[in-house]
Length: 578
Ligand code: PEP
Ligand code: MG
Image: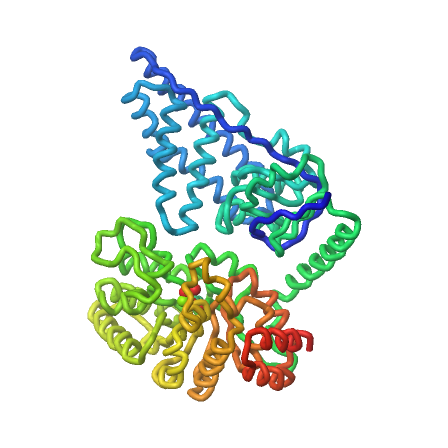
């Protein structure tokens, strides 16, 4: 009987194959008392297990396929470093000595403590880093318990199959790529889990967080994964199969043609040049930017440099982080957004500061927080200024709600320039400064802001939240989150018009920029710069290249006069089928 199951699709693609369920089997960790005269022997047994674990990882490292991206191989390096870290190298030994217990129990105690610290972190990315600890601890436990660590012996038989597991370690995933596994389903993990990151980079269709799927799928059963639609179809009938084979073929054709677009210009049919920038969170995200040949960085979310740490990054540390991005962009522009902490992006650190640990979406966040505490803000401004001596940099201010905030930033920037001059440090004296349009107030005042700044950038994620009065992280009201709400579209339109009138560039860097369904509408509204996650850039480029801005005007005008989102959606279908 055909059955549809759900999870989170983390890499675009369709896979059809037979299911192979990997049973890991929970490890039974014994707890024993070790007599004093055997403690040293128990410690040696633990130390030997660490050596074997490192050796196993080195063997995997030597077998990583040549074309595997560097950042993927880095997962293995991380695990090797963890084995060598005092928390695993020394922590369990202290527990063996203090509790006079066996190595397995000591390792479990230590591992649970470390995992508890990671689970406390609010940042979803760092929270999933606990997976690394689990994988490493698991590897050492299996050695202590004399159980096989790698799934490689099973994996060998898995060519062409869809693997279903509770969770997969980076080492398992790399081996799977090596053995031509067609897709992965895991019961655990979210979009930022390791399995997800690896699957995306390796281009393996994958669905994670598919809770309890192993209860509903039998070994050898035929299944389809549609990771775009977040669905797993078990035992499909012939009609469904035929549909998906066709769908898969057309997707593969599309992917190949998208890759061909990488070096093609992003011009419309009527030769309008459209600039496609990438959004990044950390300097580590640069490899994705290179893969799609983005025209630069339209949004560098610097707050990620400040999170989950015990000390604020100082001017120098920030300068070096920005410099790394600028150097890697080789002359392409880098738009650095000043600290946007607060609401969904909290410090969640042990920082020794008076700054609020948490604040609401309407509270002391983003530029409000920075202006309130120059000791937090000025080092960042100086770091950005210093970085601007090495390549084209733009400074972008988040969550502006009035002109005064913008003027205060410009004044502080001037003070920082004077300070750098005294220190004889170089910077770009003409560093362009722009405002993000994220509040209805800023969108309505866009003309005023445009007259005082060098560029505007529309942050639709927040603009939608504040215009529609819905907390963007509250799932209870997420049904109201609507980029096509006529009020949102009119505010976007007002901002674009203001930029055109003032003769300054306007870009859009919220999630809307990366959704090809909206591309033509935004082009029709006059938008010429988009900034998005690199993974969506080529699809947007394709839409740009197939559009003729002259033909978009009539329908765009109709859309801007609509009373409801449903009406907008109907016209949007039309504009997309032009
Ligand atoms: C936005 O609000 O659209 C935006 C780009 O900023 P962030 O998602 O970081 O709030
Ligand atoms: Mg925002």
